[in-house]
Length: 232
Image 1 (tube, rainbow, N blue to C red):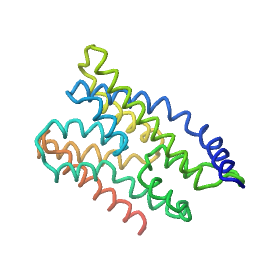
Image 2 (image 1 turned 30 degrees about the horizontal axis):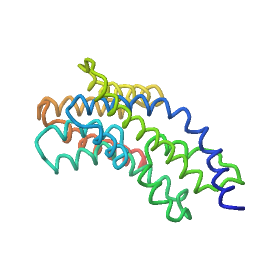
Image 3 (image 1 turned 90 degrees about the vertical axis):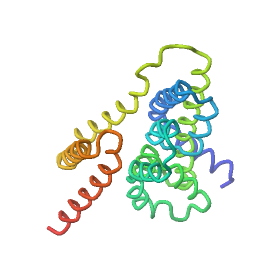
């Protein structure tokens, strides 16, 4: 099969899977770009950050990190805790990424929640190259986020309007994710652990420093819970 035909089939198969992601990524991406502009950053920041970081929740957090004092260790642990779930994603995709050649590097870099969900569960036809299918799924999703963030940065600098409360979008996004997980899971013990630990750390470390200790404690307690469950 010619290379052009391989790419055409992979694109035609991958694109429909990513259409539902398009609207969500554009809305959040544009909001992120406008937020960056409202925070005093030029449109180049959301453009290059969305291109090189490609971690939606972390990019929203990075706005505050860039505006505050420079604490590289805090930024490192913040990024590690927020994106720790990708460790488990990566373990799950080891076999699926096998034999994809150089594409594996981009697949690892671009493995967001949505790309993982599609590439892990999609029923890929036998006449479609598996590696190129996963590559184009990842590329389309990356482009949606990049283009949304770039447009948001450009529009934010061109259109003047009241952006008060816009930074609440990150909080709203995490609340929606929490509610989706709550409705999907029958066992809510992990959610209760997260709420209880966060509240305790908030009281002990106060609002300015509670995030990293609470994330570390949540990760340790959920890992211990999983370990005990496997032993029983």
